[in-house]
Amino acid sequence: MGAVSRRDAELNEVKWWSLWARLSWTRNGCYLLTSEEFAEPFFNRAGALSCEGIAGAASWAEERLRAQGLPSTVLVFESCAGATDALLASGYRAVDTMVVLVSKSAIPGSGGAEPVVDTSSSAGPWVSAYLRAFYGTEELAGSVIPIARRLLKAKPATLLEAKIGGRVAGTLAMFRTRGLAGVYCVGTVPEFRKMGVATRLLARAREIADAEGRVLILQTLASDGAEPFYLQRGFDRLYSKTIMEKES
Image 1 (cartoon, rainbow, N blue to C red):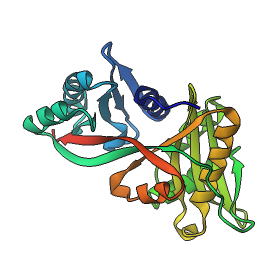
Image 2 (cartoon, rainbow, N blue to C red):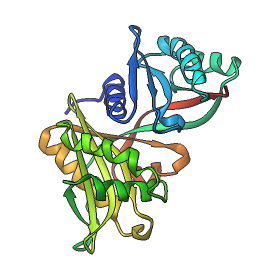
Image 3 (cartoon, rainbow, N blue to C red):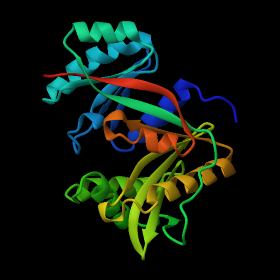
């Protein structure tokens, strides 16, 4: 398996989130994600596949997102220093960093008989665990269950769930594009944390990727503090993006 190109990794991410939010493209490689179900900036943001497209992405975000009463959010590659400076000068501020990582070695599963990782066959339990892991509540179930049902039918996607004592303790999603398997939605239900749930899920994802001849990649927000966890499990930083925000 060869080196992972930034463009391919970006396309994996954008195509994955297009299953959660509406995706629009321009000819110069700018994209915009918008969502009526989720008001979070993560689901309402712009970006570009190259530094040259950042200005257009920002303009698009300011027009479309502000019309929805949302802040203009743009993701900028760490290598696009000029674009970052221009956005700072126009009133944007850096609010977080998205780090993209690549798996470089096999991930040893946690010890013991549990957790047991299976492919999810039903949207409800996976969504319940996902929402409790990330939000601490299931209030968004009405919006997420239809998405999960679509994912279960999408050939590029696989939903994994880890079980302890027959209960779903954690979630992970895989999304395939050319040569890559992107990992998303890695979460552990609060009462099952520190039990090796995420490690076992990642180990299974790596096994699947290896069997298919794909490179395993994932993304994490710096504010979540999870990068050291992934580095300890054989991941390396591939690149990062600054999340820039300008209030409406």
